[in-house]
Image (cartoon, rainbow, N blue to C red; front, top):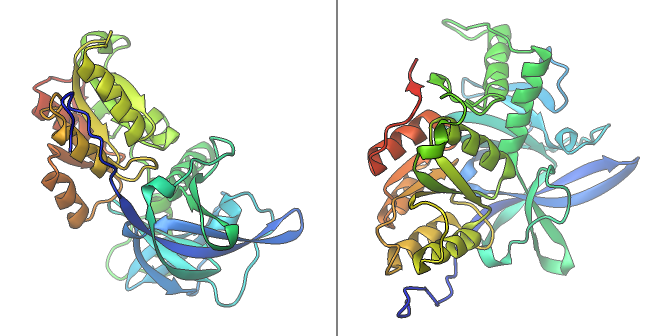
Length: 351
């Protein structure tokens, strides 16, 4: 429902599901039991602790590799990534196998509890350092906090650490996978997770000269991850775009309302690029609100998400998105924008 100004006044009961799990951490010599979660659509499956083959790698957090139905999966120690010096371990640990785009990784947890359904309105921003892997939190039973972790950022940080250390194996397996080739492939999967690399550019993209974005279209980029905002903005700016950012759908809608009211000092806003999973207001709700807004209904929208499933893609397109691009693929994001808003990027793609 919208009022005469085009603003939507009804509250949306937007929900998502997460897998709740337990992690026992060794903090200053004391075992601390915490409850954590990850969005269920990012999880491919949960498996019992298999035999882990160690990697010849000194990067903290890389625990090894295991084979899942013939596919090598890199194993990440969550406790180590969170800063524990000596990782606790129990006999009945589990591995949560995640999938971001075409990349898979396994994260070691102590136990999985349940699938929990939560309203986005119940999600709180973390109170700690912006550099933390805790991307959000929510209050659950017994006044206990459940912390939602940013697995994507962990993998990207591992990639950056690998580049610094030079620990990027180049081995390729052919025919039947042997252990050495399997470990090398898994290491590559983990260490090369971020296509953007350290400077945010996609493979095959040659950045434009400095300052070429000044005459380009203006787009609004929406994501709750400061890491994704920074790297995606850098890549889009090098392509010749001007970029403003918002940390969630609620902040984005406030910017869009200001734009629609005419109280706007910047250039014309050409498109909105939005993540799906965000506190306060998720990307699907944002898309729905834009399409229902009298003065914003024709705004081009591109969903930019790590959720690569067909159901999520179809949900975004059904709500009126003009395109859907998996995260960390700046080349295809630029191509989608070029087609949708009729703009020619000031970079060479595929070079």
